[in-house]
Structures are given as C-alpha cells and as structure tokens.
Image (cartoon, rainbow, N blue to C red):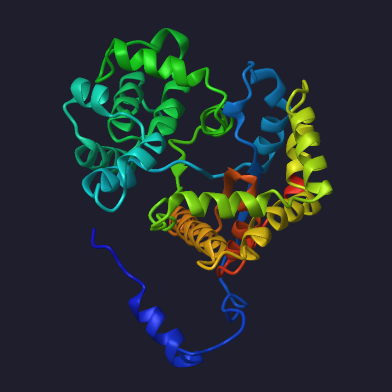
Length: 353
C-alpha cells in the first residue's frame, strides 16, 4: 500500500488563505462528515518516584479512564524507532544524555534474531493482520517482537492479556524476556501501571510512544552557566508554587491517587506550574538568554510530541484518544491539539469526576 501524503491539501490551504496568514488556524471542519475525535490529555506526575505498590491506589483513576473508553492511548516514552535513530547519530544526540530514555533491546534481539528495524517491520505487518481472537502463541510472539523493537509498554499490553497459565517462555520469548515482562508489570511507571494495564483491560493491541527528544537537543557551549541561569530562574518560584508542590507530595502518599490526579490537572495548578517554570525562564537576564534556549527546546519537543499523537489517530477519524503525559506538557498539548481539524479536547476535570 502506498503512503499518501497531504501535499495537495497543503497547497490548497496555502492558496486559499495565503502563506503569510496571521492569527489562529482557519476552521475547516464546520461541515465535516462523521464525529469529532475526542482527546483527553491526562497530566501525570512521574509515578516511578513513588516507592510503594500502587496497584490499589491507582484503581479509582483507572476506572475513570476506562469509562472514557479510549481507542488509542499515547505515552511519554521514546519509540524504539527514535531510539534507533538516536543511536545511529551519536554526534548529534550524545548517548550519555539520551540513553536513559531508551531501553536495551539486545536481550530481545538475541532471543528473536530481530534488530530494531526488523522488529518494527514485523510488528507493523502483524498489527495490520491482527485477528479478533488471537491465540496465546500470537500474543507471546508479538510481545517478543515489541521488546525487540524497543516498545516495552506495548509488549506488556500483550503479556497482560495472556491467561496466567500462558504467561511463559515460547514463541520468541525466552526466560530472560519473561523475567523482563514480569519486572515491568510490577513497575510504578505510569506507562506501565496506568497506560499498559488500561490498554490490556480494554483489549487494545498496543500503546503509542510519542515522546521526542530531537527538538530539545539544545547546543550549549557553557553548560555550567546554562544550568546556573535556569536554576536561578527557578529559585524565584512563588509561595503558591511551593505550596502546590507540597500538596502534590502529600496526595502522592494517599491510598486513592485519583485525588492526586484531580489536583495536578486543575487549570489553576497547571498555570501556576508553568508560570513558575517557563515564564521565569523567559525572564532570565543572562546575556545569552539561556532561559529562552530552554523554553524553545521545550516547545519544539511539545510540537513534535503533538505531531506524533496526531499521527497515531490520523487513520482513525472519530477516535477517542487518551494521552498520558507529564503535567507540565498538558497546557501545550491541549492548546496545540485543540487547533487540529476535527478534534475536540476533553475536559480532564470532568473525566476525573
């Protein structure tokens, strides 16, 4: 099947509105056929920082998210494809800076014989032909291929849909990969503890890794001065920002983390957070304007992440999309995705009631 690019549509828009048009994007979906795509952006703290079991405390939140009935779930992880790109260009993307964001695919390569590009090719073909009632062997194989492709949360989605007596080695999974799946199944990281578990519960085949670190790869000559400038800006955080941080820490220790998610997704809390991060950075008085480097990298990252999310449901008009992302991203995600044609942003506060 040939890929179809939207070049003609772009040319038509430019000719109709002018390449130098100012102001908000024009509304083109007034006479759109079919329902809008609904996108719920769930701002999240990074749960891996919490060192206690969270299965119980997360259950009320997962119930609310299940009620939204997402068709597609996106997560703040680098895809195996981008990690493969990064590894091929060490002069552009220093390994010591980005390696922590990428998983080790060598054990899965040893078990399956697949490097990352070969694994991507196999799981792409497999998903196009995925049966309504896959066998346990098919799920084990797809889990193994996802691991080889650097898509560990999606591997867990398949693993969790296996009956307990089918969660064993075979079909590309060796004992080392089974141990890996068991380990990530116990992880507090929200990509596993929320996204993968919810996807498995809903019978989805995968989650979509949409993070991107190609846009915030800021080139800094004096890293010490840069760090000092950004931290000096953050040191000016308001009393309200500090109080919000304290409250978030308190809620993270509770037995019901739904309260935590309601708090971090409140519009006033989100606004205070970004004002005491990015607005302070923009006011950085250093001669190099380092704060603006920081914000530019942040915005480039968000633009590319949002593009990845949009691509995840481009062939699914009317899809219901849940995007789970660090809460500082949420204002950008809501604003950018809200400009997309045929897309509506779901109120997180209403969804979490």
